[in-house]
Image (cartoon, rainbow, N blue to C red; front, side, top):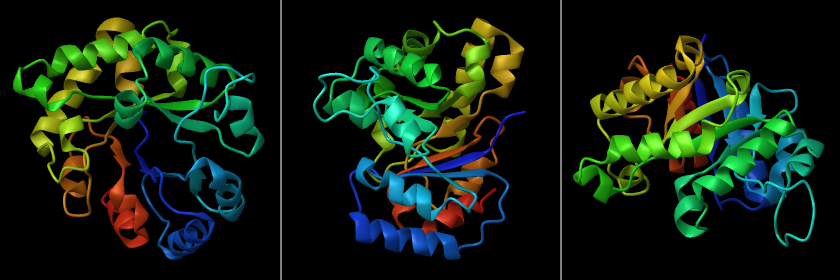
Amino acid sequence: MRRNIVAGNWKMNNDLSQTEALITELKKQNQTSNCEIMIAPTHTNLWHAFEALRLSDIEVIAQNMHYEDNGAFTGEISAPMLNSVGVTTVILGHSERRAYFKETDAVLAKKVDAALRHNMRVIFCFGEELDDRKAGRQESVVKDQISNGLFHLTEQAWNNIVLAYEPVWAIGTGETASPEQAQEMHQFIRQVLTEQYGNRVGDATSILYGGSVKPSNAAELFAKNDVDGGLIGGASLKAEDFFAIVNAF
């Protein structure tokens, strides 16, 4: 059975005091929900966030990690390091990592393998640029990103994979794919999974929408058959807005 998930990606926002304040506000919100709730603070605040939320239903996850366990990789964070502070889920392949840090499908495949090797769950991101959408290439781009990054995995490994579709043209631009456009792509993604692995993986894999989800559009997006939640950016930085999205389920 697919899991409904709402994950807040805080990106490079919130110092320690701001993180403390936002977590305090999150803990005040109604946490009776029909979905898994996650937040991804910056790396420097992961341990504090984990400790602060240890007794809550909110899982603390990471925004990124390296594919090696240790070594001369200045500034990087490894899966064992994340595990050591209680983090067992990581976002990989976010559009900003692909665009600004030139992360390739091959690098992301190695990161996925490293995460799974350490029994971590992966939220794997992908999506097309505006030029791709205008040229009608969105399906081929998305299929390539999924297959290059994930189709080397065994069927069993997919128990720890969550997908997050990010139409890049709808992130931080104020633009949002319509619920119908989101459903159309999510249905296509599920079809791609089913063709590769069969119905069990196709039916059981959660696919999140990651394109400017807001309190005003969350319920309509989440009502679509193949939209199993959201990877939330800006709206996750306000506790009231984030839980309005959570409660859209």
